[in-house]
Image 1 (cartoon, one colour):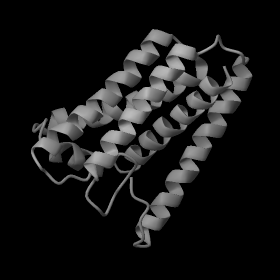
Image 2: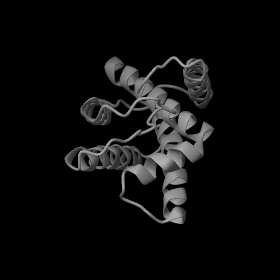
Image 3: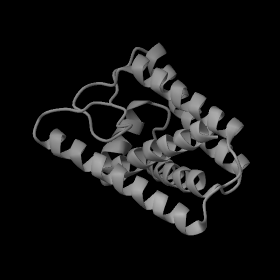
Image 4: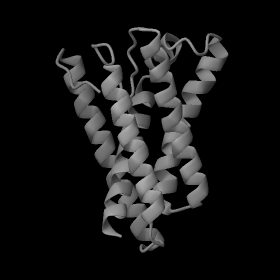
Length: 172
């Protein structure tokens, strides 16, 4: 189904942008994790930061190469439901956080928007998983598609970083 393929490309793009943004400044991402108040131990926070980044990179690879549909579904849903649960927690506590979902941010996270965005991503994951056709591309075509999407993601992150450093903002 063509819509499922488009959805999968969008998911790869989102997970790539998120992982690249976080990996460019892991220190800021660790601070962000601490703000949520779920983890307080420095080692646990560092482990969580690297696991989230690795999980997002892994999700993008699994989606493109169609390795293990169930594993892909479990990983992507685990990531997204964790993000939603953390945002709900700070919303109920009325905490101000900078989630660094897609890199550094000068403004506090709009929690309602972030929760809504993540729910839409969850719906897209479920849609793609439900309607995913068997892989239609060869390995070389999948490698090319991943390279294009990853490079596009990196380009988008670099533009965001450029605007951030200039004092302007593209906020997630």
